[in-house]
Image 1 (cartoon, helix red, strand yellow):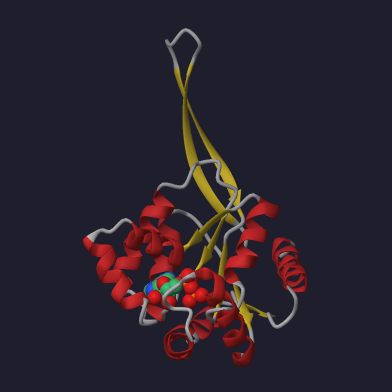
Image 2 (image 1 turned 180 degrees about the vertical axis):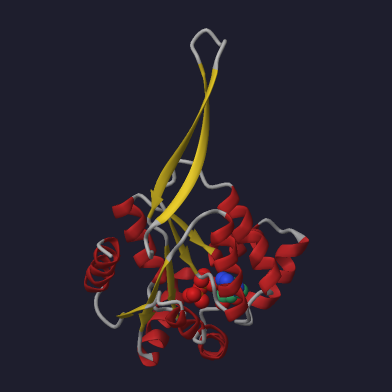
Length: 221
Ligand code: ADP
């Protein structure tokens, strides 16, 4: 059930003389991964590796929101005020982003990695509904990293990222937001029988190996 993410697609083809129209119904298997974890847990890094190795599309909701800020739109100004203080943007705004993303996936898409979504239980519920709407399913992988290491990594990142939220006060707030609002989604997925936790305190390569093991396990189910 986990990776049996089957999408049904219809392709319409014309005969070479243009007289006949054939339509084919075909199944597409996808590998869809929800990568979860605290800020600094390595979601972005692992997502990139997964995207490269398995040919998946990577959606970082943080990147989408930062692009909106960079566009200078009114919405971007509103988002900036939330993100730079380490707060989450409202669930209904995120719903639109994800719905739009899933609706416009190319039909030969091998799978997706959701990096940064869901971050609240209502978002997890919405995602279940949206994935169902598009005949998709996804595997939830949670990167567990000790708090001291998270802080250390984010401070290091802040030296080069230029991100307004990578400073000590905001980092502490983001970790608190993670504990209060995001951590409870683990239970949501546990109840669905779709939850894999990984020890993310190791090197990038070691963490990637653990993720690959889970993917293999899930594929063989
Ligand atoms: P990190 O996980 O390291 O904090 P991201 O780049 O994933 O960084 O996200 C940066 C910020 O974007 C978050 O702190 C939050 O304000 C906002 N954000 C990203 N994804 C979501 C989401 N699913 N719901 C609400 N806010 C989000």
